[in-house]
Image 1 (tube, rainbow, N blue to C red):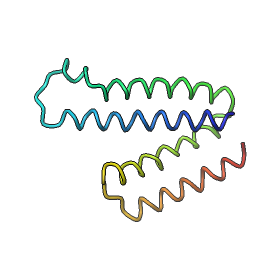
Image 2: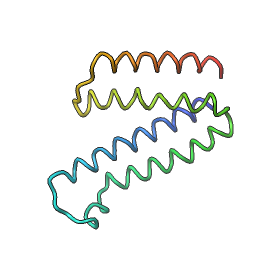
Image 3: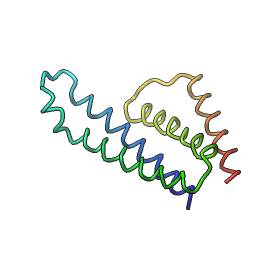
Image 4: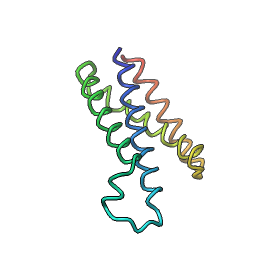
Length: 114
């Protein structure tokens, strides 16, 4: 159950980051004021996702030691890198992919501890 909650917290925070990116992309080139920006559905999705992610994260911290749980949030780095590459078509160099592989290795090692 703890790992499922941790995965849920990761996915919600990633969704929040992606929604933030879409929100600022929708504002690009617009001279709209703050009121217009505050009506962005992407902004509200980001806030809701990040808020819900925070609540799930609190449940994770009730069940896992922070020394295990927090490093496993680095899965966000992996997920966001994949989204950046395949959704936003951002270039990712080999060194970055090596870092992703190392993060995944670390998460796998920590996952064996739980």
